[in-house]
Image 1 (cartoon, rainbow, N blue to C red):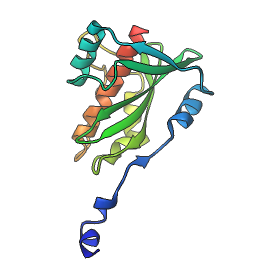
Image 2: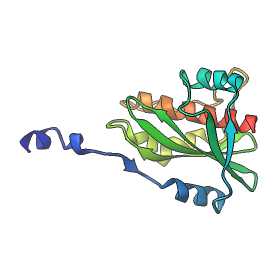
Image 3: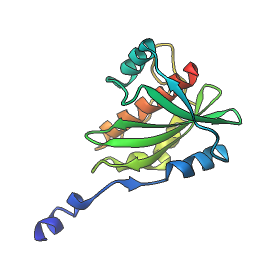
Length: 161
């Protein structure tokens, strides 16, 4: 017990749910529309691999569309754990980014609105990079990279629908 007190209880820290995916979809789209999916072709999988630096965990990616907006719920590994993130795209631009579930022990600051709003209005450039990279957060570099990759991935997926 003393060891847990000395290490700040971090050993007991679990996933931090900031918003349930269903609540994210309702808040972003006004309701939960029918689920749709993109089944990635071999070419698309190669492009996703270029964005993430690895294969995405599934070959079929779900999305929801309503009123000109498309919402994706995507996951990427920060340092060792998945970060579940909702990304809304409208007219080929990032409309919003929301960390839904944060599982890492460090870098939770990426869930703050002050950080995620930096993605708003970003587009995917011809070289596959995002038009406005967010400022880094000391101690959260890998989480920042993960969210940046997910914003890029959502923009790419939107272009493939």
